[in-house]
Image (cartoon, rainbow, N blue to C red; front, top):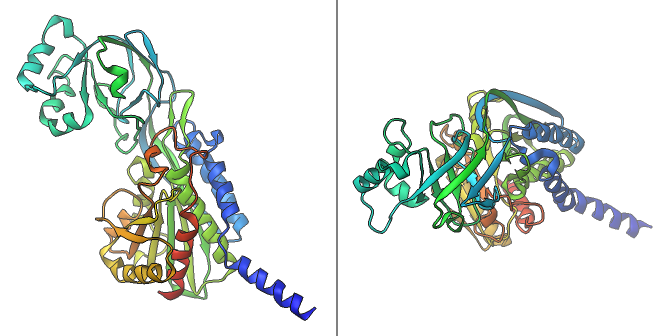
Amino acid sequence: MKKLFIILLALVAMQLNAQNLTHYKQIVKELSSAKYQGRGYAKDGANKAGKYLKKEFEKAGVDEVICQPFTIDINTFPGKMKMWADGKKLTPGVDFSMREYSPGVHGEFPVYHVDTLNFDPEKMFADLAKPEYANCFVVCEFWFSYRHHEAFGRLQKPGECPNAGIINTWTSPIKFYKAYGHRVVEKPIIWTTPESIEGVKSIRVDIDNKFLKDYELFNVIAKVEGRKHDSCYVFTAHYDHLGNLGRKVYYAGANDNASGTATIVTLAEYYAKNRPEYDMYFIAFSGEDANLRGSEFYAKSPIVPLEQIKYLFNIDMIGDNNPVQYCEVSDEGMRGFALFEQINDKQHYFKSLNRGELAGNSDHYPFATRHVPCIFLENQEGDAFPYYHTIFDTYKNAVFDSYEPVFRLVRDFVERY
């Protein structure tokens, strides 16, 4: 009986110290389901997901959960989303998508294909002045137009050129963004795959947009009290995603970022069972895909002073399987990064840690610019990464290899830092 009791105690201890992969998968599956319509803004998917996360944190046994409201202006596409190329119907999210700041557009239009091999801006504008190209859509590969932004910028300005809009081509799978959707420009901009528009002479479109002014969102903040309250650790992930592209298509966002959100919920569950030395805050941000709006709002209005943060971990897109873990570290976080490398070298959680240049690409950035010690963890270039910001980032295509090593790396760091 004594041996049995010892074994049971050991099993309980192992459970308390283990990450919860089953719960993690459940959360990823839930957040990427049709119920939340891509956790966007037009159909209130983000706020529905936030309410679900509040309940999940409460079930995890944390000491407190609060919701921090803020507002954004954001352009959305919840209505009609139809396009035909020379009479062939294209599929939204597969053959085409919209630039986030595009207005809606309706009608039939001629198409002008830019000669990128013999590009001459003046010839292009002379061609566009011809009657046959009046009110046309100009087609060009995205990166080519980016490199010649001065000329192509004129195509977007009212009065500069008589074109109706622009079509940028992007190789499949076609992507969708929201970062600069806080405004609507004058002329529509459509993204298509090259094969969808190659040789096409005319298009017909029936596309609606809806601009949301002062749309209400909220960050979900959970707290686990430690034995000391003068400092704290912060774990962050964004739970919003791209939402809808028309009435039927939505972006599930299993990897981006149901994977990171599920991780911080299970970390909260772990620390609620294993009382930490310092206070722990778990912040699920909204508005990240709208240009880091939730994390920027929090950084300006923190519930505890930023200087009390010992270290911040931002976990984004870890639903993948690259054995090399990508990360970004703030200047103040570099002392901690040396410890991350020591732990990883000893435990072999990842083949290596690939530290990239600090950039404004996720929710760590508003903290890094305010001198908070922080690290951004993202698993890039694995099997799931090509589906980033596409309709194929689904639970079916999610990969779960990185969850346990990320969880353990973060846990070990907190124990030793």
